[in-house]
Length: 235
View 1 (tube, rainbow, N blue to C red):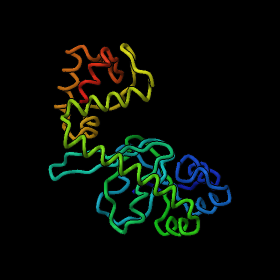
View 2: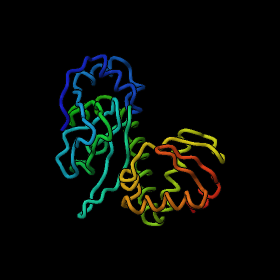
View 3: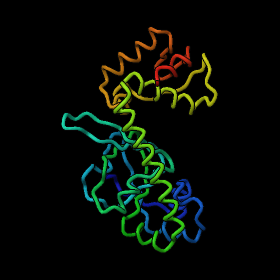
View 4: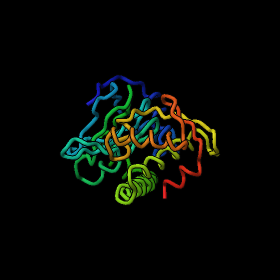
């Protein structure tokens, strides 16, 4: 668990308004929920909670980046999703009565706002409009997990890498064309976790793309030399 901290009610409200779950609620409603929140600080690499632990509540990310993942018996990790400011963790788990479905780890020094399970449930019962927003968010996460499962089942590592690179590139440069560059601040180990692979395979795949003149690698910056070729790799 992270270290508990003291946070003003105004700051807690600010964190809640960053989240799609809560941002459209009236200030009086946000104030009521924020009164029950607790800040937790996480150092880079620190575990927030582990899969199969008893659910205590959900979290809203304030700063930093927190990754949700599963591990197999060999210790290989598969990243499920990564949440940054405004993102939520364990929002589904507070309702289904089961344990946490995944483990979570801070990818950098991070701050999160903790909301106890009982408080969230009470809040949703009192404000049904929040329940509809929860359902919308859950549906989006279900689609994301379904897409991930499809990629793992039907795509090889090179294809999954191409998909990831195009997604990352579009965040920096919405209109992709040959010669554009984008930031990829992930180690090969982190990339492997995203792709359900191991570092050595990801390294070989990146080097192969560079040898084929599909891209250039400059530290954590990627230059796309042949966008169409990268797109073809996703099929």
